[in-house]
Image 1: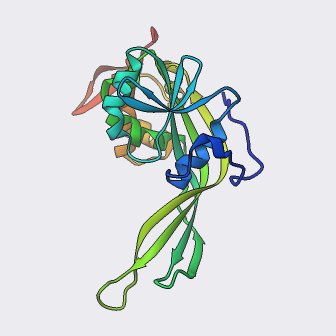
Image 2: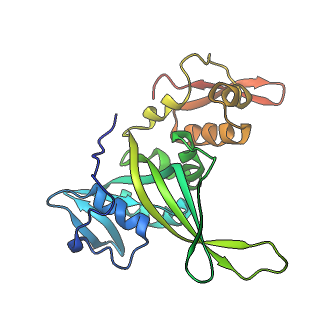
Length: 239
């Protein structure tokens, strides 16, 4: 299920990769993924691929995936593409004052999981079902550094200045659209609604709706009818 390898420390970097002008989280993940023989920042079809490994292109996206549509669509016409999407399973928040001194360090109470990747996948449209596309969901412990900015009144306001990698905790690989059906519990009977799915995976309904939308777009989930105003879904046995 996982092809990820662990580094002893996120400080273990290779200067030949060309990470000096990149955001820290993106640069660290590129190093973490690197293997002997890889090429980095390679111009291809009018875009720049993060990593080229043989005939496979590896794209690491630490921001919104919506901006990747044109790039991915172009790459997928001629290449297999592995899309790497980090998810903050654990986050340390560091607040820094105007003088540059650390004022507070704390763990965020929010714990994200694999299902959170659907926040990104939903923006890729029909590309998510492309046979040349595979996805690695990298569960990370990241540090989010926030800098104080001027604010009226007594309340301090902070803006995110940097995200960096503390540790890669796990990696789940999806090599075929049908692999994504694994997010739906096997105990959930066919003919379920997004409300049923939300309850089964202990997520808000809006998340279940995103999951259903993506899986329908991939062609591995289909509408089998309605219960009142709610669609009933079934896994596609032919996927």
